[in-house]
Image 1 (cartoon, rainbow, N blue to C red):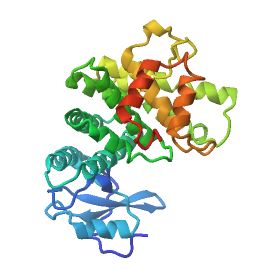
Image 2 (image 1 turned 135 degrees about the horizontal axis):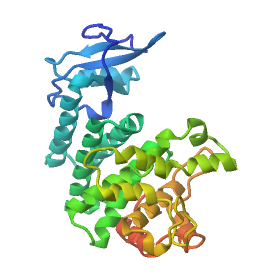
Image 3 (image 1 turned 90 degrees about the vertical axis):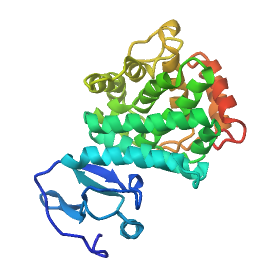
Image 4 (image 1 turned 90 degrees about the horizontal axis):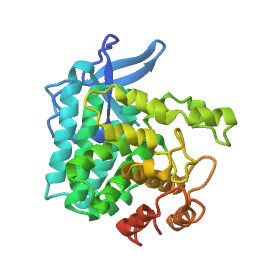
Length: 336
């Protein structure tokens, strides 16, 4: 698979812990001064081969070679992980500050970087380095949408319609951020904390069996019970992180609660469900309805809203649904 381009040095390294560095997070010519490795499947597991030494730049030519050979992810050693995540934060910031890039290009960088990082988070949910990187990219996203409300529509236009845990997490974070801003309830700093909750709302699913998550048909009663454990599993995972805000934990715990008490895991009444959790629920349901699944096609935005305001009228906050319509507007991809 990777035989069509030369390696800088072919060194196998089995002793280190490696962090994924998705290609979407690596920008040519922007000072990637750390080693990058290829992950090669082998009989004993993945073999890590040095692809780029720290003193060499990651060039556009190298990026094209990787894309041509189907490589989507490189790896960095654990001792270089801090430098890598600092680099991600710096490069995203430079892209967003650039006068040479369009809002669509900036949105694409934010979207791709967020999706790559949340994938790494589902794979290593207890990593403080990955969590810190997520917080920085969320801060960039919140600042961008706050400074230019049109960025929300631009980012939504990039949303994939094929459902995955990773894309869904980013979609809910972006939609939730726009809704939180629309309410005028919180400061930008507070919304950064809330947006982390939106991003991590489904993190407990990393501890649910993949067979259940990927099942193409209806779940059995036992499988439903296992799936409904994911809010509390997520709380258990995230509660151990230093500096994890209470708002994040509560959004993870409450995002499946419903105003009529029919939700889970605690069957809360409407008055006990915080506003940020109500926002997450609306964004969660809307994105799920408008995404393709193995077992059902995506609804149009109109069909999703009709269902939410009709069949789910007693479950979700209709004021927030109307804020969603107002925020995205009639021409947004997920509404038409």
